[in-house]
Amino acid sequence: MIQIKALTKRFGKFTAIDDINLQIAGGDRIALIGLNGAGKTTLIRIILGQYLFDGKLRVFGKNPRNHRVEVLDRIGFVPQIPPPIQMSVGELVSFAAAISFRSSKDAIIAKALELGFEIESNLKKPFLKLSGGMKQKLLIALALAREPEILIMDEPAANLDPQARQAFFLMLLRSMEKTTMLLSSHRVDEVVNLINRIIEIDHGRIVQDEQISESRLADHQLNCQVMFTEQNDQAVQILQDWNFKRRENGLSFEGSFIGTERLRFMTTISHFANQIKSLNIN
Amino acid sequence: MKALIQITLSDFKESVRAKWFLIYGLVFGGAVILLFVLGITESKVLGFTGLSRLLITYIQLCVAILPILVLISTVRSVVGDREANILEYFLSMPVSLGAYFWGKVISKFFLVFIPIFLALVGAVIWGVFKSLSIPWGIAGYYALLLASLSWCFLGLGMYISTLVKKQEWGLGLSVLIWLVLLLFIDAVLIGLMMQHQIIEGVIVGIALLNPIMVFRTGAVLLFDPELTAIGPASYVILDRLGYNGFLVFSIGYPIFLGWLFSFLGFFRFKKGDLA
Image 1 (cartoon, rainbow over the protein chains, first blue to last red):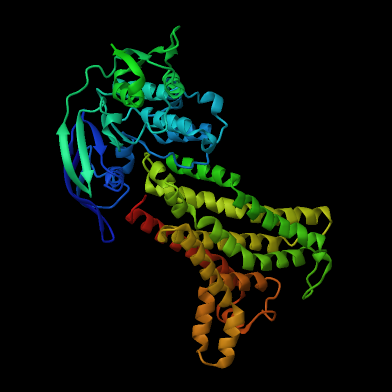
Image 2 (image 1 turned 135 degrees about the vertical axis):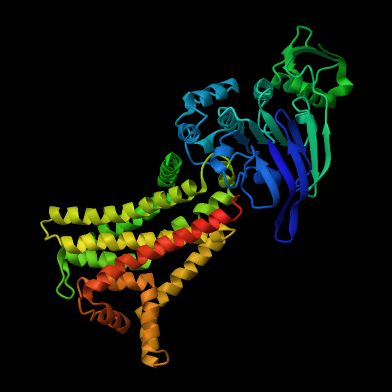
């Protein structure tokens, strides 16, 4: 799907991408990791046809710079920071549906609803006035409504609350069979259950490219029970954010999350490890 | 075509909501209202009074303020979207670069021209209401002149917008260009002519290349066919091109410049890094 040969991108004297070779096949779900300034965003922008470059790049066998419309209609993109678009929600939805051959208002509304964002009751609201999470949900819905063959996302879940993250990951899991994904992230644990390949970029070069085994529990709903040795208000707040219910004794909590969120849940709750009496995930 | 229409409409709607558009509209609408309130229709210059007098004053005001207002309102189009990462997002969608750029150009043209045109139409309607005689010829020609000058500076603004990396640089460059063009109307050209240091042909050439000078001369020409009210450069130009020739030139030349700068901007936009 994506072939990159000897790709180099320079900004003046600074080399942002340095002689990269990469093949991305259909079904690859890649975590593109690296520090800030490593070259992740530059590589994404080159694939989206936004930067000139030296070397060779083919997306669906075509140069995205010269065949923008046909290539980009098959790619969904979600930026890390929602841009300050002045349009209302309704205008943005109409715009995105109108310019694509593969999208529609109904599809966008349905995708947004799955993520917990009701477009129809926010039609008149300016996009700028939405909360960070709402903006991100809408941008994800706009990208997924096109049923893209390649999905490129820059820190996609950064602004989402736990419920929306779970819905988002479930949507991604459902589209895994037919979608190639490129997820840019600072932290691999955020996306580890979604991916089957990790590419690490450092100083514009690929320093790691390896296949990883897929999680078989990624799309399973996991039940979880946590018992604390003592009351901890901060832990209670976090568990409530994860939709956990308190049991009668006051120190036990019960809830569930999907497999993709397992590592993130455990990382979050590990801050209270000294007060955890028992933890069951099944 | 669908994408072009969508970009044009969305940019138009976005800009209409922006504060700059409100201020822009108030400046031109307010200017006409102010001229009426000040009783300019009662005064007389070179035999002109009533609505003709008002239109002449209005067009003189436009000579000075229209170019800079058009530049300020368009120069941020591409560079502003780039800085705010709006360009990165919209150009990740299946939109051709032509649709994006020309959609913005079309939208901005209507945005800058509509308030000036409405002010002109408002003045005519007010004139009808006040039973003043309507100088249809002057009103029609001025509408064309204003459209051509708007198009010229819109093209220049879009070109600057693709040229600079920061909005501040674009605004700074716009003000600089505007000041240089304003300096090189008759005021400076008279001085150069009087010093006899530069040959007449060069001075006339400078005057003819300056769209503000061309606009000013064209605007004055209608009520002062001998151009006695303005400087010698204009007089020489008139002598060379003739009355009708200059009327056509004063509309055609800014339109040509507008297209030239728009295309230069588009090619720069198309051939460079987008985000």
